Length: 357
Image (spheres, rainbow, N blue to C red):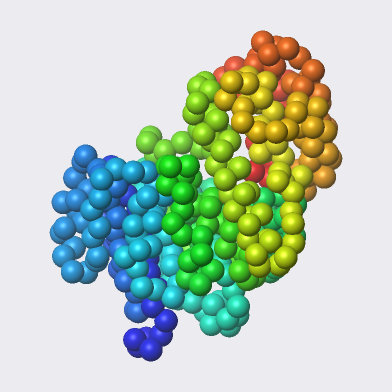
């Protein structure tokens, strides 16, 4: 490998994960693709993270900043980077040695690609594989021109942050990420906008590892926690609305095409909008009525792909019940749906996490 090869920037965002940070950095430095730069952004950690970073000296570019959330850390890393291709790595995850070379092979073979993504091995806190994979093997990762999927569904089957590599030219117009909206889940912004600038390629191999530990939570658990507070849940809903507004802008600018303000196939987001309107109406800032959300939700459930018929039927029933019940009754249904401990046995069996997202 020579310096004539395109530069790959591996940008590690970190907040209080000093106990995992060294493994993330070592995995980036150990890539068999040699023309890389490793940038580590610490977002105001209070643990030993900066000591770990400084121990690598000039082998990495260390960026130390005040706490501002994940998007602000990603923005700082992007601003400091020079790579033609960028891979954003969460500091509790780590890469396989061939990750960068595998990604670059795809970019060389298909110069128009905007993004390459790959599966991640799920590990426990000590980095031992649990047998899980993200996305799950039964889910087909998106590949090719997926603009029609984005128009209909806002998002698509894709790995978390550490399983994505982007061509710089495909994300530069979307940077910086709105840091007040995306204090967490900043990867959603990049995942949902980059494919408007070119096709996506999926690598079926597991080229990185996603660590499950006591300080991180699953998407289902995070949603259940946010449901307890109207302000937090409203902020979560706004993440989806924010990226949709950006998609509308890009579709119009790039393709001279107008898309709907709410993706009609985006079942999870429509579901969240209905929950916000029913449970926390004081925090609801969107124009869609309960009836509109009910109709959109039932339609999205009918059209949902990679979801069993029984699950689609249950979500149709869910929209009917939540839309019709008064607020107190709707709250009970919502909490039973997203809090496993409070979910009746029948709901637990029929509304289990078998769906696409």
